[in-house]
Length: 107
Image 1 (spheres, rainbow, N blue to C red):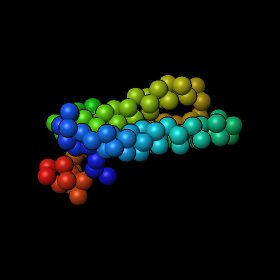
Image 2: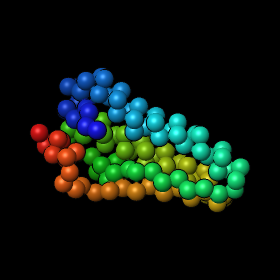
Image 3: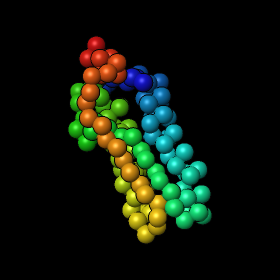
Image 4: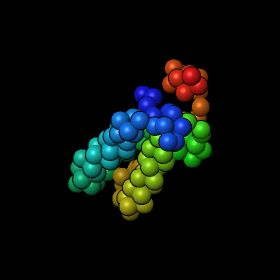
């Protein structure tokens, strides 16, 4: 999903909403559902798909990159909150690859 890849000042509010609702609020809402179950059963695995864009933003990526930075922060917080449990918290941060997504960013 590629929304909000305009430069800051030109980003459509609806693109911001779509990206934040999907990449941030969706992740938080889903995690909120699973963590109590993992705590009750005494173990569980949380695997979040981040991006190196959350650490190394690029022009035209203010929205996408900031959602991935939020995901990174949320994941790290969850990891620290569950460090004394058997809940494993993992973030995978893929790098740049040639995909339909990356070609849309260049256009």
